[in-house]
Amino acid sequence: MWCTYAMGLWFGANLIASDMDAHDYCKYQEDAEGSVEMPDSNRCVSGGDVMIAFFCVLFGGLNLGQAGPGLSAVAQAKLEGGKIFAVIDKVSEIDSSLDKGLAPSKVEGKLEFRNVAFSYPMRPDHAVYKNLNLIVEAGETVAFVGPSGCGKSTAVALLERFYDPDGGAVSLDGTDLRDLRLSWLRAQIGLVSQEPVLFSGTIFDNIACGLVGDNGAASRGAVEDAAKLANAHEFITSFPGGYATEVGEKGVQLSGGQKQRIAIARAIVRDPSILILDEATSALDANSEKVVQAALDGLLQQKKRTTIIIAHRLSTIRNADRIIVFTDGAVVEQGSHDELMRPDATGHYRSLVVSGNSLGTSAVAAAVAGS
Ligand SMILES: Nc1ncnc2c1ncn2[C@@H]1O[C@H](COP(=O)(O)OP(=O)(O)OP(=O)(O)O)[C@@H](O)[C@H]1O
Ligand SMILES: [Mg+2]
Image (cartoon, rainbow, N blue to C red; front, side, top):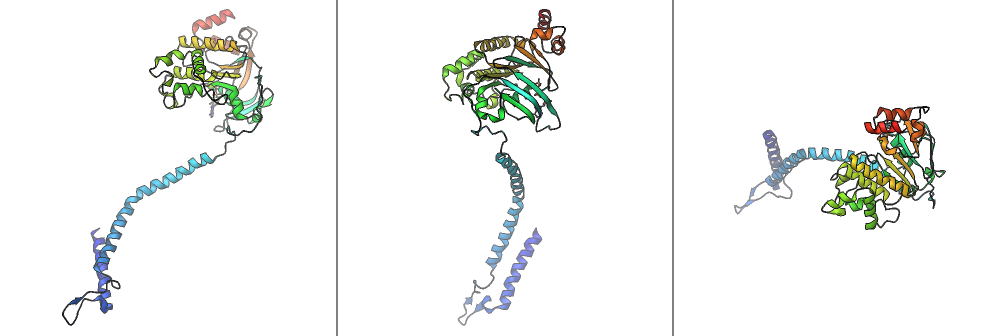
């Protein structure tokens, strides 16, 4: 450091001295009257010039050294920014903002999976379905049951067109879902998913957003009616803010069961043609589950609509028109509860019931006794 100072000043002094040696106008000269004439500052290196250059180089160097970590942060930000822009610029294969496709005026609600093959893009080597064939008739209430990971929720993801099948087709009333307008298709389906997501905003906003796409403007009455049906009205009104209570980012300020009930209200507020309940009551206590289940049963009886219920607690799906048992992405058995409990049935459902992994012991006893 000190050597650098010494070098700089020595070099500057050298420049001044060599200018003085080379040019008379760079020398201090005494005229005839005895006054000293200064060197020509425009043409000669002066002490001031040396000091300016010296400090510029010194401070510039120091600051450039300090900018190092900042520059590496800029380089890192450029790298990460590139990834973000790649995601933003990516054209989605399934784009819900496009107005393309059919939007039939009437929906019967018949759903069909024909020779469906599918694996998730993140795990292309693991086929969830190899050749799934399944029909849900219009107005029918079916239940999907089966061990965890057998592909029940994946069927929902394909129906909502979160993904498209790799082979075969999924259709609604005989029309391939890929030919339907996506926003229209999703407006026909009310979904309570296994992990319900709420949006930052009030409880009212969260239930009312179930209406958007149908008639946009949400009436207070419709939202309250849906909340009552979902057994949510009571706990909502017990909050000081009532329906204006903020739920927080992703609903963090609510319990799992409360979130689920709001998600149920959001799904039923628009009275959808197809209702999908994926473990809709799994986070509720036994009492709340009974009430919500009764509300959902009432809802199903109120209007014939295609309904898919996915549940591990088999007591909740006993009354379904048809129970479809999945194993490893294939349908292995289907029929009503009574049919599937008969001794001549293949026994997949019966063994699920008897193993009691999904029923309480008393419910198992009741199911077996009632079969
Ligand atoms: N987003 C994903 N990416 C990759 N693989 C996935 C994804 N979601 C699910 N899977 C895999 O697909 C298979 C079927 O999952 P799915 O969610 O349909 O099971 P499930 O029958 O609904 O199970 P559960 O009863 O536990 O909800 C599983 O093996 C799972 O690991
Ligand atoms: Mg699931």
